[in-house]
Length: 185
Image (cartoon, rainbow, N blue to C red; front, top):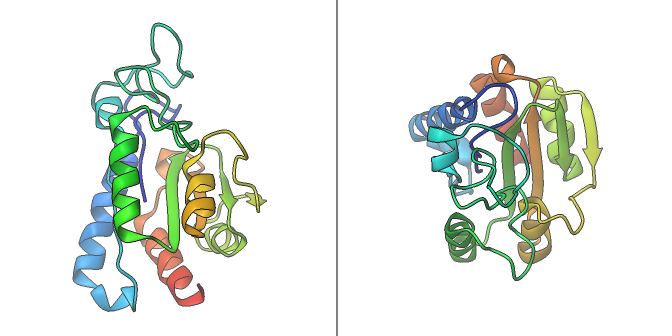
């Protein structure tokens, strides 16, 4: 799981997703049995400078788009094409993924009320979290999405979960969805 900085609702709204990540860490630390045979790696923020100081969510430009992008103007949502990995954060994520060879990868974002990617993950998050838009079997072909990279490189069940809005993020519902996914996949 990973989180970005600016998600379009208000400046620094990515902190809502970082808070969710920290809650999930606490939950699975206290309920380790729910992991079954899985080992869970949570990256609370893939773009910490965007979370702390981000001001916009525009795509990378010459002057940079600080928020969605890193301080250097690298769009963290599009930096995962094979051979790209321009941001140090992307390279560190790649190293982590190479080490752990995941079989499930979920990328949390906001605020488009959709789930993109693996049909089992999509269905589970729509049912458990109450999201609306089913984008099963879409992986952002050629756009540099991390879910496309993890699907193609590690054969991982991969998805992007786009919450409705910051107020709709419910850790208990996310925990229920994750527990169900780990039993089904």
